[in-house]
Amino acid sequence: MAIDFSPERWQTVREAHSAWWKGELDRPLLPLTAVGTRDPGRATPAAPMLSQATCHDLSWSAEQIVDRIDHYLSTCTFYGDAFPMFNLDCFGPGIAGAFLGATLDNSTGRVWFHPPADMPIQDTHFEFDPTNRWFLRIQEIMAAAMDRWQGQVLMGMPDLGGNLDILSTFLPGEKLLFELYDHPEHVKRLTWEAYEVWFRYYDALNEVLQPINPGYSDWSGIYSTTPGYILQCDFCYMIGPEMFEEFVKPELSACCRRLGCSFYHLDGPGQIPHLNSLLAIDELDGVQWVPGAGSKRCGEWPELYREIAAAGKLMQVFGDFDDFDALASVIGDVNRMHVKQLSPWARGRTDAEIRRRLSAYGVE
Image (cartoon, rainbow, N blue to C red; front, side):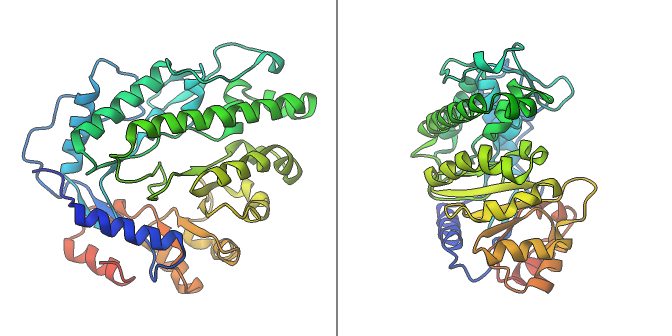
């Protein structure tokens, strides 16, 4: 059977998400995709499912890769605010580093990036390269997807990475930390070079996707009708608020101004000292909080969500129904929330169970 998602359902997705971005939706966004609940009506294609473990294999054509994704999506039932989408984050977190010449290494099954050479910061420069093989590969897959699905499936933007994170790919380990003190002017120069190149890649990829792609999204899974992205700076876990203000916030604020819809990936307790500064960025629409391994679950951080809500920002809960129920019981108003990790909960659940949980929050 073909992918089960109609143009009418896409219109519902557009309307609900547009209202949510404006703060006008009277319920939370609860996307839930139940995998393996439908018979695709054909055998599994020979091509591997695109992942961090398989992204290096260029022996399969873009059309074969898309056909394998089509088979997978044909097994899915899309509940609530879910929609058919494929995340191109399978090329690894910070793929813009590879676009700029870093080595993509997935020999462990996970993607890591290594600098092409040990260059002093004074000699390091970032330039847009439209001939980079990873950039071309992603463009090819996007083009094949647009041709195959004609807007029924949304292709998400790859995880381009945060700009200081891109710098840390080329200045690894403690090197970038030392450069903040030794050559702050070159760190700032590279930050803005990365900013310009980042948006050139972002715009070039969108030129392949639009106007056929039914909207915009990324690894967060949050949908928008205008260009958006979940921004990040995992590197700032290692710096204090003063350095965040000097080296991170100016470029991050510029990204928010340039994008129609923006979120920030707040990754781990080490980033909490930067939260007040982030919330002061007027153009930043929302925050995704990820507690990280070894920390309390999302549902055990109500004070943090209250702080984000008090600033008038949207929120993405990186958790399941248990986390969301816990937050709803103490926060009350959850209409600004988008919940990301509901799909694993659906495994082994009946259609009636799933619909009952969603309907408790006004989601059909």
